[in-house]
Amino acid sequence: MTERDKQRLDELEVKTAYLLQRQDEQDARMNQILSRLAYLEAKQYRLMKELGIAPDKLDTLQTAQDDAKTINLTVIPEQRLN
Image 1 (cartoon, rainbow, N blue to C red):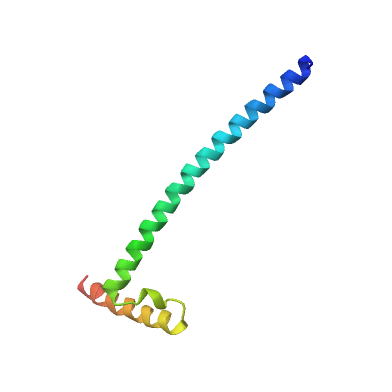
Image 2: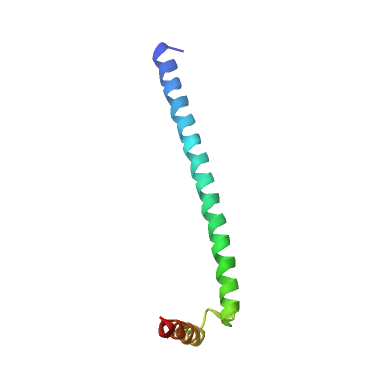
């Protein structure tokens, strides 16, 4: 193996180590995002239950309209208090 080959191999090892480190950082960041998403989904589910919204029926237009009405009726009294 020539000196140039050794130098190139060293460069590739450095790049590989850098890429592996970046991948680990990205994996950790993705896990944080997934944890936050799970927390937000659970909080959303609890809030929907408190508002009387059926979380399992979110896919229909009628449900979206009913939910909007429920939210508006909840917000209006708060605005009147202010």
